[in-house]
Every structure is written in structure tokens, then in C-alpha cells.
Image 1 (cartoon, protein in one colour):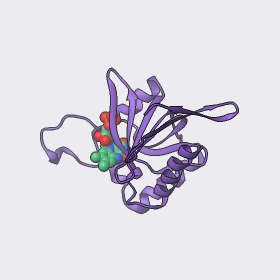
Image 2 (cartoon, rainbow, N blue to C red; image 1 turned 60 degrees about the vertical axis):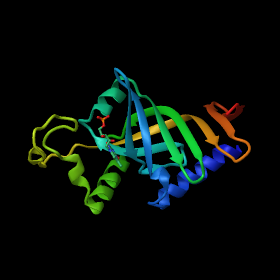
Image 3 (cartoon, rainbow, N blue to C red; image 1 turned 60 degrees about the horizontal axis):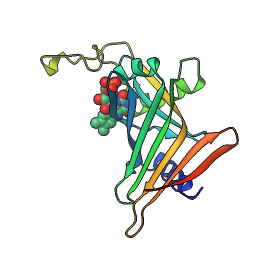
Amino acid sequence: MKYRNLALNELFRSNADRKHPFNYFTLATIGGYPEVRTVVKRQYTEEDTIIFFTDSRSPKVDQIKGDPRSSALFYHPRKKLQVRLKGHVRLIRQSDKRYTQFLNQLKQAGNLRDYSTALPPGSQITDLAQVFYGKDIFFCPMEMKVNYMDIVKLGKDVHHRYAYHLDQDGWEEKILTP
Ligand SMILES: Cc1cc2nc3c(=O)[nH]c(=O)nc-3n(C[C@H](O)[C@H](O)[C@H](O)COP(=O)(O)O)c2cc1C
């Protein structure tokens, strides 16, 4: 599990280091086209889930409701390490005790405004002045449960690529041609 552990080390390290490149990832969902966007990784958990926050009105939420299969891409430029993850994304509802914890986290950081634009994200406007903030908060924490990892580490002479698949007995390792 050397390369899975290598990836996990970086993911867990990024939980505590705000400058770590794994604090951002590319989230891919299934829409009419493959849909990709940059998202802040709030936490990578011991249960192999990625926590991220979004606006409940954003198109990605509808895409995920239509098909929860998603991918996440992390890249560490200095270490030339690519981590591609696949899994299912679900909404963390208000009934989940973590919801309030995440909401408080946002309040403390003063970032609640990001989830309270009067118009839904992606709405066309003709002037920036039309972006104003309402009373309603459309905060939506989400969680991706990872079941597949594809890890590429570029070296000077040799490159390494490993795949990990989660089945009933745990994580299965495969060595791949890079
Ligand atoms: C550096 C950076 C960080 C971002 N972080 C988030 C985020 O944590 N959550 C989010 O919903 N959108 C985030 N965005 C905006 C998304 O990339 C995207 O534009 C927005 O969520 C709308 O996506 P959608 O139309 O596919 O739903 C971020 C954008 C940038 C450039």
C-alpha cells in the first residue's frame, strides 16, 4: 500500500497546512458534458471521504443528484504526484450533526456570504452591482466516498503508477503501466 499511503500522507497533511496544494482539487461530475471545476477540500477523513462545501443552487448539486458518480483530481507540482479519486458524492443534510459544525466553521471564517448571493451561482448578470447578498443561506456541505484511487508519481528515471480499489475485504492494489 506504499503509494496509497503516500497519497494519504499528503491528503492528511493538507488538512492541517493551508498552503498545501491538495487544499484545492478538481471535481468532475456528470452532466450533459463531463463537468469540472476547482473546489476547496475542507477535509480528507479517515473513512476515505472528501468534504467540500458548495451552494445548494449550483449546477453541480443537480448533476450529483442526477448521478452521484464523481471524480476528484489532486496534483502536487513539486512532488510530481497526481492523485485521481473516484467515488459517490452525497449531500450532508441539516439532520447530520456535522452540518452545524461546518456551518460554524464558515461563520468563524467570515465566509458565509459566499453562500448567500441573491441569484443562484452561474446566473447571467449585466453588472457586478447585481451581485448582492440576501438573508437566505444556501450552504451545502458535501461528501465524496472514495472507492478508487489512481496514483502517478513521476520520477527522474522511472515513473510509478498504482491503482487501489475498495472491495469487501478492503483496498486491493494493482501496479499499472505509467
Ligand atoms: C480557487 C477556487 C476555489 C473554489 N472553491 C469552491 C468551493 O469550495 N466550492 C464551490 O462550490 N465552488 C468553488 N469555486 C468555484 C467553482 O470553481 C465553480 O465556479 C462554482 O462552484 C460553480 O460550479 P458549477 O456551476 O459546476 O456548480 C472555487 C473557484 C476557485 C477559482
